[in-house]
Length: 606
Image 1 (tube, rainbow, N blue to C red):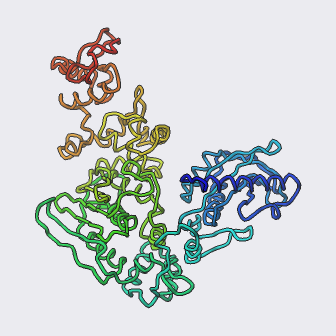
Image 2 (cartoon, one colour):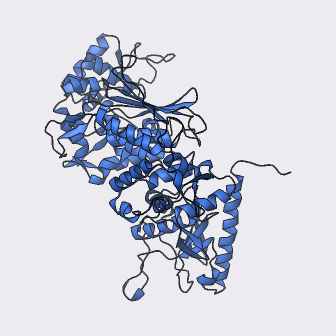
C-alpha cells in the first residue's frame, strides 16, 4: 500500500500534462500539423492580435490585452474539461510553425485570473530557440463561464458548448463529487410555483437578456440553471432551492439596540422554499434599510443613499446561506439593529477550504460548488469571492468601517456591517479619483480608508488590511499613487512611508472640524490637539528612532512652528526627549511614557 499526501493527485495530474505537452512539441518538431498533434488535453494557440496587413507577423507585446482575453476564454474551456488541460501558446494554428510568445508570463496569469477567476500556472519553454508559454489549467470544481457567458469543454480536440445540467451530471459521476450535485427523487412536480416566480424576478432584475433566454416552461428554467437532469430528477441544490422546506432556513429578527427590546421576532417559514425565504428576508431588509438624504457634494448624482449599501447587505446574507454547513439544521440568523443601522449574519459551520477571517477578502472557496453555481446562475451573487471584495469596497467608500468577519465557537461565522449616515466628504474624495475605474478597486478604497484614519502607512502595515503579501501591498500602493484627485496624486511617499497628498486631504478637510467626522476618526490627525499629537508621535516612534518637527508638520498639516510647539509640549510632559543635535539635525526620541518595554530611552539616538 502506497502512502498518500494531500494534493498529490494534483501534482501527478500536472506531471501527466507536462508529458503530453512534450509529446505535442516533439510531433511539431517532426513536422506534424497541430490538428494531428493536439490532444484533448493540449491545445496549440497563436497569440491574438499579432497579424498585420497581409497576415504579416507583428512583434509580440508583453501586455497584449486581446491575446489575454482570447486565452482567458480558452482557459475556461480547459477548466471545464474533466482533468483540466494545457494551452501551448506561440504556435501557428494551421501550419504548426513555432512563432513564439511575447506575453509576459506573470502579467498573463494575473489578467486571465481577473477575466475569468481561474489561476492557471504559466511556464516558459524554449524550443529550438523559440520562447513559448504553457498554461496548465486544473479541472474546475464548478462550471466556469467564459467572457461571453458560455460554458464550454473540450471534446475531440475542440471546445464545444455544454449546459450546466450535463456538466453537473458528469461531475456527479466523478469521484469526490459535491453533495449538492447529487440526484434526488424530487422532480419538476415538487417545485414550488412561488420559487419559480422568484427566480424569474431575480433573473429579470439581474440580466434582462438572460431572463428572456430562459422564458418558457418551468422545466426550461430549471434545465438552464443546471438543476434538472435529463432523467427529470432534481439535484440536491435544485431541490433545496426550489422545493418547499420542512424548516426555516433564514431567521430575521429586529432589535432597537443590542440586548434591548425585540421589535420584530423571526417569522416561521416552514413550507416555503429556500428561494422564497430569501426573497421575503430581502424585501424586509430593504424596508428596514432606510434612505439617508445627502448634503450637496460633487462627484455623485444620487440625492439619497441607504444606511447600509444594499449590495453589501445582500452579499452578507447570501454568503451565509450559500457557504454555511448544510449538514447542520440551525437557520442562518440575521439580526437588524435599528439604532446602530447595523446587520449581523451568523451562519452555521466555520470557515472552510483554508479560509480564515484574515484571508476572507482574497481567498476563494465554495463548500458546495453546485449551490454556489446555482446562485450565480440566478444572478444573486457575484463570481466566486468577488462579492466579498464588493462588500468591503461599498462600505468604506461611504465612510463606514470595513465589514467584520470572524469565526466563533460552534463553529459558526459572524459577519457584521455597521452603517448609518454616510461621510459625504469621504464620498467626495472617492468619487473624485481618476482614472474612474479605480473607484471600483477595493485595494485603492482600503488604502484611502486607512490613510483617512491613520497619518501614514506602509506596505508591511497594509498586508493585514489588504490580506495580501508585502510585495502585493507595495504594488497596490504604487497603483494608488498613480491615481489623481483633481490635478494632484492621491497619495505620495514621505521618507519610508505613504501619506495622503495635501490635495486629497483638502477634499475632506473642509469639514474636518465637524464633530461627526472626529467621532468617526476621519483625519483626526490633521491639526490635532495635544492628545492627537501624542498619538501621531507614538505611531511614528513605534517604527522610527527619531521624530522631528518637520516630520510632525508633514503628517499633521501644522506649520513648522506649530509642529515644533506641540513637540516641545510633549517634551515637557515627559512623553518625548530631545535628541542630540541642533539645527537641521534637531529631533526628539521617545520618552519613558512612549518607550516600549525593555528599551533604553537613548537607544538609537544619533
